[in-house]
Image (cartoon, rainbow, N blue to C red):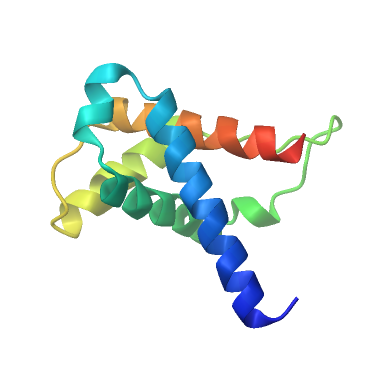
Length: 109
């Protein structure tokens, strides 16, 4: 696969992830988190994975890596505030993180 094909595939995967997250958020949050905002948080989730070292973590005996969803949600809230994207509740962002993880899990199956 060449670079252009990879970029197209990544964009399609991101669009599918955003659509999945939007669909699986509680109704009151669906109105608060538009598509553009979800793309922003999706990028931050990937940034968190990269910077936290979680991608290099060793899986447990069952092959799983412990991921602290609350830490990710707090990271998103803090980063959004710092980057002047708005004030978001870490409790609300936890729904975004969980929906993203559910999406990723479904993609692996």
